[in-house]
Length: 343
Image (cartoon, helix red, strand yellow):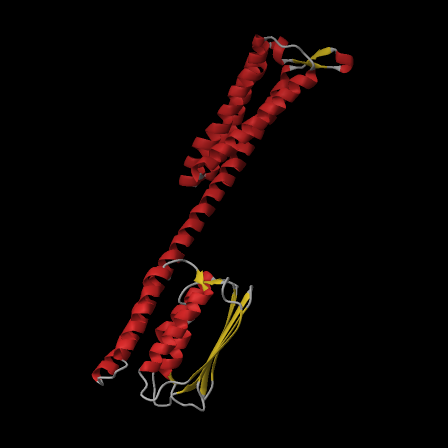
């Protein structure tokens, strides 16, 4: 479709020119023979089309676009205009009855001087040079804009795929470490952990490949992750999970929320019943408000955030430009992430 757009523009332009010529014939109220029409509109039409496309297909691409020889271009179009003016004037001198007459007062037919005709031919030739240049630059600019948009879209898609390929192994690596710890301890929770992981991997492999997923499924994925994390704690993990609003019909980019939850378990304290990890979700048809707060683990010296949060923030920039607010508070005792999305 994009390749046909210049052709459509040209067809519209020349259709408009032909309509103006037809209007001229109607307003003139003269009956032309086929020979008269051929001389009046045929010769000048060939000259005007030649001026247009010599400038459009040869002079601008070669002298302006490729060689950047603007001075030579100006000389070339000047010679082109003058040359076509001479050709048109010569044709008019050979066909004065058709080309050097016009309607005068009260319908009388008057004769134009050759000098006047030459001046008009000069103006019309210049008009078609200017129009062809404007059309050429406009079409090229529009084409370049489309190319840039396509390149930018492809770049974003490649970056998103790369970010997603980072996210999945990052989660899998941490989950397998947790299951390894359970297996090493010969815990009875190991089969349940493997089952939870398989359910989550099914979501990651088969459903999260879509650009958008149901918010309810994304939250279910987060809840499964929490249950999986609880299995690795001997005395259980304490999570205060609250949710308000409607989540059945809203859609969200997959795997956006999980990094915040994963970060809380990795760097925070999850086994303190007096200070649990607090997750709050409020959703309506337009806004999703997600917040998570965890007590900081003073014995965990890893940098807060890591690959997961930097990854998700970049995805937010690409997928929700100007449609999200992310606020992170890193106090002495607690770490809070608050995300608002226009969904």
